[in-house]
Structure formats: C-alpha cells, structure tokens
Image (tube, rainbow, N blue to C red; front, top):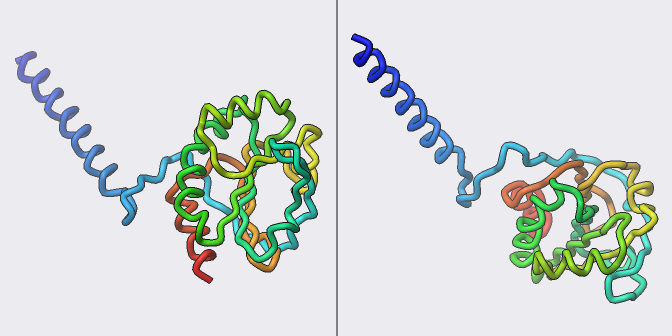
Length: 182
C-alpha cells in the first residue's frame, strides 16, 4: 500500500515538472528569446534628455549632445553590481544587432577607477562606448540612485523610456527596435 502511494506521489511530481517545462517553453516570444522573470519593463516617460558630458575610456571628452539624431540607450552600471553583470551580455547582443541601424548604446560606469572598468570591458568583450563617471554625476542628473538605471532617448532628444534594474534582450527588442524604424 505504501509503495502504491509513493509511486502515485512520484507520478504527480513528474507531471508537475513536465507541465512547468511545457509552460516555460510556451512563454517564449516570437523571436525565441525567453524573458527572464527578473527582467524589468521600461516605464514610458517624456522629458528632455539631460546634458551629460563625461570622459570615455580612451580619455576623450564625450557628450550626449554629440549623438542627437540617433536613438540612444544610456545604461548606468558598476562592476560590483550583480544585475549589471547579468544584463551585460544582452546589452552587447542588442548593440551588435542594431549598431548599424541608428542605435547608440552608451554604457556609463558609475564611481569606479578606469583600470577596473577596462578590465571589465575586456572580460565581457564589450564593443559599445563606455563612459566614465567617477563622481556619479550622471545618476544625479537622472534623479536616480540605483544601478543599473537606463533611459532611451529618441532622435529629437526626448527621454521616452526609463527603468531601474536589469533588462533583457526581449524587452530591448520590443521597446527600442520600433524606435529605430521611425
């Protein structure tokens, strides 16, 4: 009798696992990219992009104003931030896919030394521009104190989306790709 109950219990557990796997596979988007549960959805906003001028990892002075006319994804991050680490591969993949389509992805490192940032960029094979913000002025200009924090600026210089937390490829595609086609 106990063996029968034990066997029935194992059957129910196996069915539950099988059902969960099927549901997970059905949750994939049309592009085949699964949206992680901890992927933050952007909030629609509308305000002028702040004036941000920093230095890139090559030592050149850079500014948001230099990229007016492009769609800009500005992402603030630090090497010690777990959600920042988690989203880097998706940011890089999105950039590589859309760099020729008018996308400018600016990674703004907040509060760290150049050497630390360069090691991180090399480790993750990042190809998008990296700006240095050792005194955290970017976060203050965005009225944010969390990392990662991202905004999307349209071709006219208006911030259209903002979010605090890690993003993922499926959200980047659904949010920013339509703006690139405009």
